[in-house]
Image (cartoon, rainbow, N blue to C red):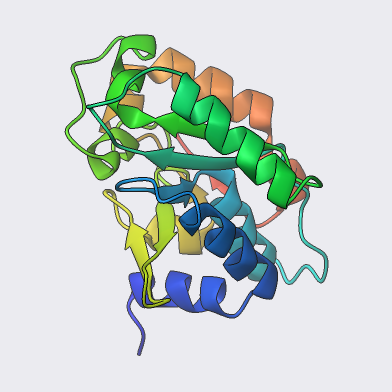
Length: 186
């Protein structure tokens, strides 16, 4: 039987579009990078719910960690490069080495550490593509909630419960993915 991590990686590996987006992201040569949040969550939940068509994404979130260059210029250049390679997608590239400021938190030490601070468990995940085409999964709170269609606050989501509740209420994921269960709203 496959572990939760292996199941998620198998879903990604079996999706040609997801693999192509990962190859494009890898082409940026960013340090400690993954595609996270809705990219992976939507892919897994579409599969969980048996959808034939992919749920459209607002954007594709690439996150990386480089404390030596925390300006927006590199992020902007990466987004422009991705837009040139794949103009039919909206790309968001963020260096997690500076995002702690926006989030009013202590500095992060890596991409995985930053992801661990995201508010809900099935979004606090990311997938990367290594040089040898093997996939890697960052899931600091595990992949079980993602595979189960369960939304719960991370420890940081518990500390920021109002933000968590506002975010999951606004997202209204169960309206799209009827098998998804949201916890922690009351």
